[in-house]
Length: 268
Image 1 (tube, one colour):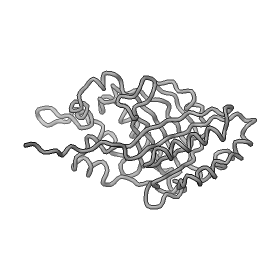
Image 2 (cartoon, helix red, strand yellow):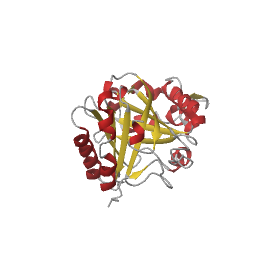
Image 3 (cartoon, helix red, strand yellow):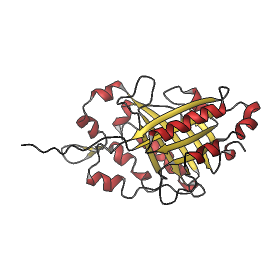
């Protein structure tokens, strides 16, 4: 007789980033769109004042600071002037907001939706949880951590050809026979950000993602003093001598924004 104790991997949360490009002549009409009323009808809580942690049904407003191109050309993200984030355990709530936003703004506004899901962690046992997540930063008010960074990524076909056990090894340091560390792996390379960067990752619903889609949408928030630390962590992850996993990574643009409290704040 065998046990039937397979851990579930069902989706626990759905998320979307709505990336907006607004022609100057339409800014006034977009400013007056009934987006706050739409959010209120769907009972979305503003992440600018998140309470103890991420609101269960959330909305956030991000105003562009700059965007930097990378491996994958994504002109709609690169040119986005604003991003609205929506998240909920209910897929229909996220879908209704996205559909409603598109109707309110109309066809003259360029909208690019980056969507994904949250599932239970795959490779995280107790020891890794205690290392990487036990002291993680929860979401703080926008006035405390005003900076936002969004980086979508895609893993190469070679990555997905590996079985899950081999993929797992890239998250850990590697050692030679004498115990000398050969490279840090993902976990050590990113360790400097654990206590100062709020991080969120959405997975594509399919694994691997369909062609032209992203496998992961990564997102970070931090205080002004920790912006250099964010760039330090990114540089360490991209250094294949430290983190060989990045051999198999293709990045979309890095979009940097500033958290604002309202829809109107995106266009002031």
